[in-house]
Image (cartoon, rainbow, N blue to C red; front, top):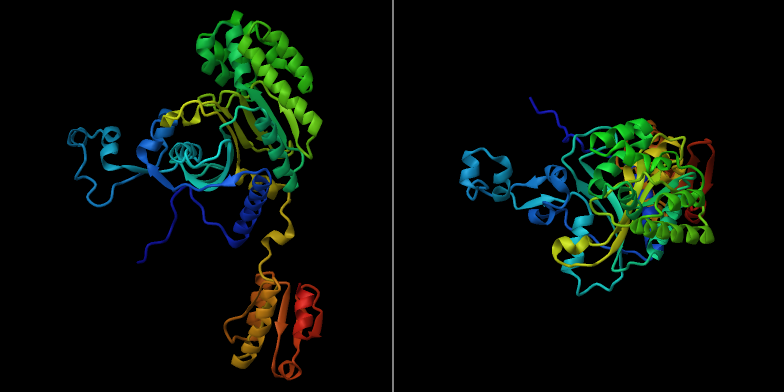
Length: 456
């Protein structure tokens, strides 16, 4: 008995309609990337293992898909590790390559490898799939696309301003109104830790603070105390827990809290500059909001931190994020190359647009006209018209088989093709075509030129 086909967990097949909708989002993002001056690059789907390993922490290393060496991969295996059944130790001797985990580390490798060819500042975008050996669940897959834009070689805060504008431009182009671009700064978080005298516990402090909207104030305080941060220390930043108001009002409170922290004050200056510029330039449909609990990417972000949330009526996680990193390429030996970048969550954006019914009707459109097949001579006659239509930019095709009329019409209905074109002996003698609107049922007798004009 033949084995029932399947695909690996955490991967997906996409129907023609789904591909069309995904391509619509990707094209919209790509168009804006290019308008903002970002240049496209692509990197291989797999890298040398030593390029990826050790760059994402212990958890990240565990989620990297390793590729077995070709041929007899056990021939060069570490015998001692093999006999001890030490899978972690044996991996490096049987697997020299791995599927990329994200686009950021391959980009850092690209910059270092091509630094003599690149004109800095270098603005690049990249839209490619990545792979993670994660536990599949709703909204989390083992294979998914990332849509990244980065600038390296500049410390200017105008880059941060531009990324706020880029987020606004993309979501406005998708007609996704009500998006909130949240921003914070790593220096502000470092300032909090400094003010309470717990700089060595920065990560523990911020990881707990990041959960404020999920576990509430008391839950955050409890987690901080469990990590060894005293109640007295937490009291010093009490006003952070109920920080409200607009951007300027929040900044005013932050200045009071961080008055004794030089690093904190520098973070406030950065945020004030970005907000000043955005207020002067304006945003089309998005809102910029200061969120001091935002603490994503603390292992690598050194300045601005971004996170984008969908409109309030949609219960969805972040649909984008990013930040400033001062030493991305340092992991490959090229020190002091500052960069800032953002990413768009393609799959989540898709779900939001679907839920809000924001995909234009034309996105999933198949072909404009199906020509009915009445036989060899009729088909040849139809193909001449199809050639003219395609040249005019109209998608059209001939039903390939000389089947019953009902079957061909049913095929057009199932594919939601708006027009059917018929040409039998009578039409051929008159050099005409019968054009039928499948939605209204109306029929017209037209010449080839009239056919092209109507369908255009």
